[in-house]
Length: 323
Image 1 (cartoon, one colour):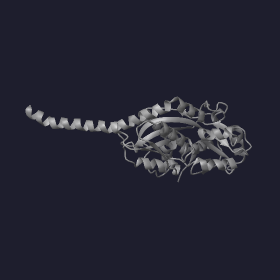
Image 2 (image 1 turned 180 degrees about the horizontal axis):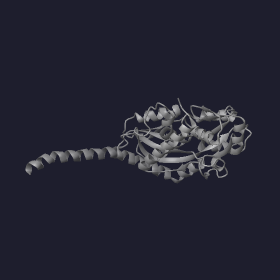
Image 3 (image 1 turned 90 degrees about the vertical axis):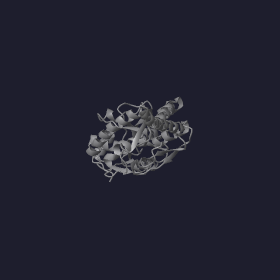
Image 4 (image 1 turned 120 degrees about the vertical axis):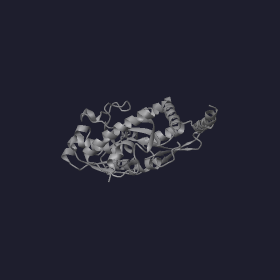
């Protein structure tokens, strides 16, 4: 008995030391500034959300937004996937980077599931079907009629292949039996001037980006892509009111590299929930057409799995490919 006690003593002490070290690490997190990667250029919904979190977060260290656009968000997401799993590098993920791109790209620089640790949902939003003012259509039915009478005459822009803006257009084409050319840009700020100028005629832009411009009269809003109308634009009908069953919701969430310690993930989750429940933040999101959508890491992971299946079917049915 004495010998067993003697042998167990060092083991127990080692376990206690390891536990204490883990606790100390959790308490110390973050020990350096946090880099929050946005996979698109400034100005769009992901950038807005990232900067709101960076401004309001109280983690004891600065949160620095790092815009790394390109390849439909793959460049920035891959950067985070390869980063140290210590919570110092995060990604403001989109439905494109973490649900759609795996079906669009034959070669992905990361695995959408295995390479990341889900942290929390942040928000969702409709896309807004908008057209250049010179296009002679006032609603979805007129747009469909025009497209059928003028196949492939129109072009629709997006901030990149695989974005929700892109696949919303592909879903629209598939469900209406129409054709138009997809023109991918390096970011929405490059696409919008061409939409205003008429070089492209159609776009399914994120509502936070498109709604203010539609209200200013620079472009015309025809419909929103969610199943029901957003409170931010109650007078704008849904595509589904004309095309039964049409729905394309864009969402945004926080992910860390796979292997990030659970206690770090939960600390980040708690801070996301706190920030986006702040009354001024929630009011700002709703004014932009964004709905706060907060979750546990497990809820985010389960939802992501369903979205991957849904969008893989949309991509397959549309025949869309990024390469």
